[in-house]
Length: 343
Ligand code: ADP
Ligand code: MG
Image (cartoon, rainbow, N blue to C red; front, side, top):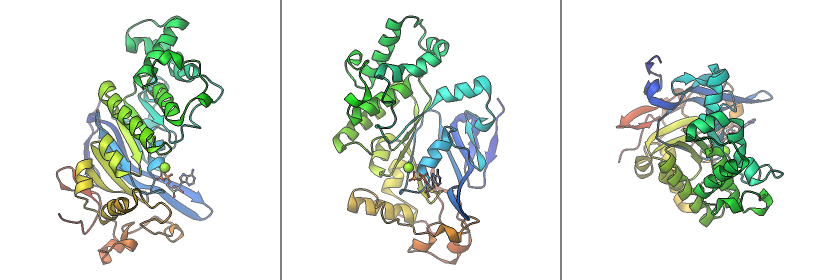
């Protein structure tokens, strides 16, 4: 594979073969009438093999869009997604099938992610059955009878904490709680031992105690099965727990990136700082009233300056006229701000 050494406009060095996933200059625009909504505005991010990345930000900041683009369920208007050094828009045939096995998505709503007419066994066995030769080579044994297939699915259910797994095989989703459904969805997504799980607010619809159990499970499975997680959330606390790195998004742009611990303890972008403080006050982001107020109809060509300029206490002229680039400030800690906070 060719070695692509590059330094993009936003300050991230990359050697693509070292990375599992890279977003290179990703822009996604949703048009509604004459209004162009920049859901993603030149996003540059990368995840090293084995590492995890949390995407945090208020509702509407582009997190879900980024997740969908990552697994090729949504095409960006420009930019490219590199998976193990290959541009995913160019994958065809067996390379595309491999990519689909390696990347899996877990959605927010456990009540709509399972087909109500399929039993747990039918849902969880589907990826295995559709890729049997691949599955057999993965686990190094033949799975050529229904009994063996049921045993493999039961094993996976055990792994996600549905114990004993065989008791769950013939149940329909309506018999399961939200937490149990999310475990089934997770079991299905792990059947082919993916390299990357994109989890879009996987516990936000669960009760607090159940949510903590599912997060613990996710963290344990990640260690045991050694997959990477792109963990999308509007909560900094759980993101910090699941993922070593964090990207903070504001209105389609990454405004801060770095080790989760650093970002939550020493935020450099005024937006991140306010986000953390508002979270401490209300126990979650105030989704009903955004911290950064923008009328997109005024920015049809995309915003010129910083997306947070109109709400920022430290705004100066340059913030309104020029886009701040995501630049490394301290070790791996990057911030897109002309006036980063110092600690
Ligand atoms: P988040 O997950 O952070 O809440 P989203 O990625 O869902 O944010 O949305 C980012 C922006 O894109 C929002 O302004 C949202 O309204 C818009 N958007 C998302 N999906 C669509 C869509 N399918 N059609 C039109 N606009 C969309
Ligand atoms: Mg979302």
